[in-house]
Every structure is written in C-alpha cells, then in structure tokens.
Length: 145
View 1 (cartoon, rainbow, N blue to C red):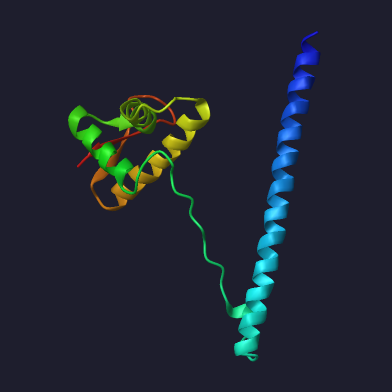
View 2: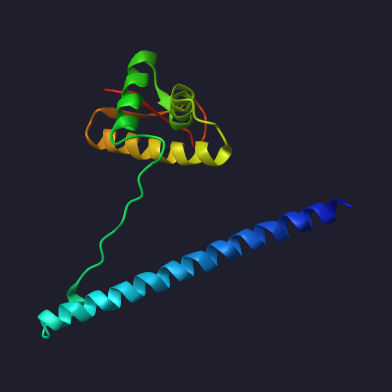
C-alpha cells in the first residue's frame, strides 16, 4: 500500500519537472530567436564584425530574502552581539528568525549558502577568520578579528 503513495508522489514530481523543462525550452527558443535578430542587426551595420568574439555575460540572480549588502551587515551585527565563533548554520538560523522567514529546509539551505559566500568574502577582506570547531568534524566556525 505504501508503494502506491510513493509512486503517485514520484509521478506528480515527474510531471512538475517535465513542465519546468518544457517552460525553459520555450524560453530558450525565444531567447535564441531574439539573439538571431540582434546578430542580424549587428551584421546590417557592420558586416565584417566577427560575432564569435562576443563573450557571454554571466547573469546573477538576486537573493530574494536580503537586499544588497543586508546579509553581510546582519551577519556582522549578529557576530558582534554574540562575541563568539559561530558556524554558518547558526548564523543562517538567527538571520531567518530575525527576518521572520518561513524556515523550510530548501530556504534554510539557500540562505546558508548565501551566508557562506558572505563569510568567505569577509575572510578575504580580513574582517573574519576561520576557526576549527571544537572537535566536530567538517564544521567550520568564524569569528571577528
């Protein structure tokens, strides 16, 4: 009996993923069509221009939970208040609580990844330093220098 619930859940998930793939494929086709028009317009004005020399720009998606620089400011404020070494999960949990964000596993993982990027940037700028956690394997903590 449990198998029917598992199978129906997997069929539902498969349907969702297939729908996302179809949506992204249509978006890719739309963008390719727009790109071909832009290429044609470039060739109209400059027929000798080599389009292979044009590099693609990387697109960044903004974090929907923090404004620009807010995660870094809140992380530093939190660490100043605690005055102790903290791991990224502790920081993420505290920031989620402060912002009043619903803490689903996916959201926690996304915010923790964002916090890790912030921590590494602050280490590079010599504002924080990494500290080995007390005996916990694979856990890194950070503290303000």
